Image 1 (cartoon, rainbow, N blue to C red):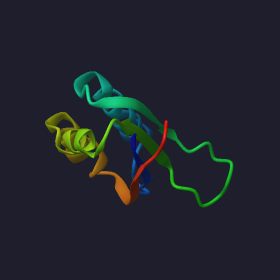
Image 2 (cartoon, one colour):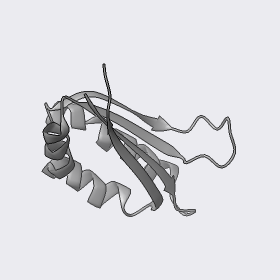
Image 3 (cartoon, rainbow, N blue to C red):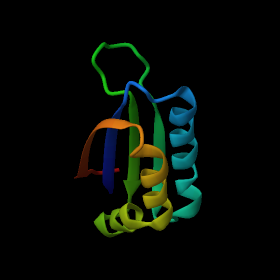
Image 4 (cartoon, rainbow, N blue to C red):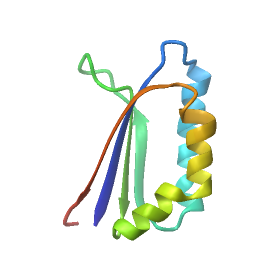
Length: 99
């Protein structure tokens, strides 16, 4: 299996509505991209100070399926229209794991 993890921090001016729109648009991706095996996302729980504000964990059968997701037009539209306007920082990693 291949896992993709992304963490975001939002700009100071990002509204609650914009943040909710990011989550709503990303939640549509599993229905649009059949290569996604598992998809979890949500805002940070606020337990530890200094954390990133939003996380996504996506699982795929292999790197080729991840690349389909990465480049998929629906995913790219969500990034361009909803994430980029409010993202202050982004961190990501991909790795292979045993299910």
